[in-house]
Structure formats: structure tokens, C-alpha cells
Amino acid sequence: MDDWQQGLTLDLTITDLTSSGDGLGRHQDRVVFVTNTVPGDRVQVRLVQAKPSFGRAQLRQVLSPSPDRVRPPCIVADKCGGCQWQAVSYPAQLAAKQQQVIDALGRIGQIDQPPVAAILPAEATLGYRNKATYPLGRSPEGQVRAGYFRQGSHRLVNLNRCPVQDSRLDPLLAEVKQDIQERGWSIYNEDRHQGRLRHLALRIGRRTGEQLLTLVSTAPNLKDIQLQAQVWQERYPQLVGVCVNLNPAKTNAIFGPETLVIEGRPYLEEIFADLRFRIHATSFFQVNTEQAEALLGVILEELALTGGETVVDAYCGVGALTLPLAQGAKRVLGLELQAEAA
Image 1 (spheres, rainbow, N blue to C red):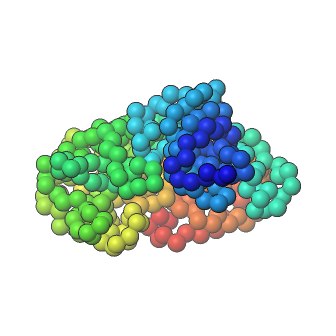
Image 2: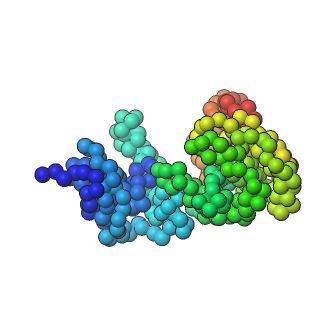
């Protein structure tokens, strides 16, 4: 008799990782997805969703850990939805990502044995992010919180530091929350569509050290915002600009269409591929500067430009790839919808 139903307790061996970060095991002829697991783990799980061909389960106990299971560097890795693979060793992460590319090319592209090169590993697996955007909320006691949503929910996990972002941004994350609290600025409630502040966005130039702070608000009238912006610039010498982005819409999009400069300038400067770029508060730029340069190196090697080519860079953003390519081609066209990015 098939007892496949919600609440069922199973012992599984995790064999794969999905692109969303879940571990994957099998029970009889069904696939079971389990968060916070590592390929090679022998686990006990509780079924929380039972569909005819698959299920989703909650980890109850690791019966036998995988050789690729490591201690997460973040103390809230099992709660925060910002990272899913911190318990997976970096070599195993690379192998899983490479296999996902191979599987996608085979399944979707119908390419038999696709020629996928080895992934180029990052030198720094932590502290590399040059940008972080944190949703804001309040604790039941009324304290301002900033962090990431617990996986699969809109319950905020409060953070005072994040080991993935550039550590030079950590003081801002911890202290700006307190400043918002003391100013008494209201926090946006998505259920009631009330309140002002929605997100805290931080950027840093990895090479220049310049920092940019942006508050995402439903309205511009934050009391004494200019005075507070001056306090921030005095406190943080590398902070070159304080902005307020306006997003009054009932939406999950982080940024709205208009950004106001409160103090300083609306952009930071960064050096990338020996070129100096201006990166605005809402502009797209690769969050891992060093890996983006490694990617550029691969592109230049593969293209082997001779100076006579016309190159099209679609979705070019601030031109991080466009401008280095222009040094070796006859002509480069960069296509970008967001005018301020270009």
C-alpha cells in the first residue's frame, strides 16, 4: 500500500543539487526536494508536500553527513534565504553548477554531450559582493530590522553583517538601522501598503573603496533626511553619496523609476579592466568585480579580436564589457534600456 502523503517520515540519500539550492533525493519512483542538504547526505526528512510524481520535505536530522558538507561561515545560513549552498564545499558547488549547465543544454537545447568547459573558480568565495539590497521591517517589539527573507517566505531574518558582502559595508548595515529607528521614519508594510522605507541599498567600489547609500521609499518626505545624510557622510569618509529612490507602487520590484540625490553624488566610481566607471544607485553592474574581470578575459581570448570586427553587446548596462571590447574591435554597439546606466 502506498502511504505517500504529507507528514510521512522518510530516510533518503541526497544525490544532487537543484538550481534553486535544494538537495534532491528519491523515494521509490518519486523525486524529493529537501532544503539545507548536501549531495552524499543520508537524512531523515518529513514530507510537507506530496504530489503524484514528486514531494518536498523538511530536514529533520542528518543521519550521516556527506564528505562535502562543511560548516557554514554565516551563523544564520540555515534561516536566511540569501544563500542556499553555504553548507556545500566549494569544489562540490562548482561541480553541481557545471552539471546544471550540461543538463540544461541537453534537456532544453537537445545537445548531446555538450562541450562545457570547466568552471573558472573564484579566488574569494566570501566578502566579494560589491552590492547588497536589504528589505526593511520591524520586530514585534518595534525595532527596525534589515536582512533577507527566510526561504519561501516574507519573514525577515535580521542581519548586522553578511559574510558574502564586502566587509567594509558591514558597519553601515548595523548602524544605519539604528539611525532609522532614532529618526522615527516609518517602515513600509506590504500587506497594508502603508509606510515609507522599503529597502536599504549599499554599493562599494572594490578598487576605489567609494560607497553609495540608497534608501528606497514610497515618498520623498522623510523628516530631516538631509541632516541625517550629512551625519552619514561625516561618519563614513568613503561614502560619496546618499540617495532616495522612489518606489510608491504595489510591487515586488525593488527600485522605482526616480532617484533623488540628498547629499554628494548619485554614483560611485570603480576601476574595472583599467577603465574608470560611474555606477549609479540603480545601475546594473556585476556583483563580483573580480569574477567579472575573469569573464572578460575569457571573452577576449575566445573572440581574438583583430581590430576589424563589429561587436554587439546586448543588455550592456554601464558598459563593463562594451568598453574593453571597444579597445580591440572596429566598432561596438551597446544596447541598454535603462538610460541612466549608459
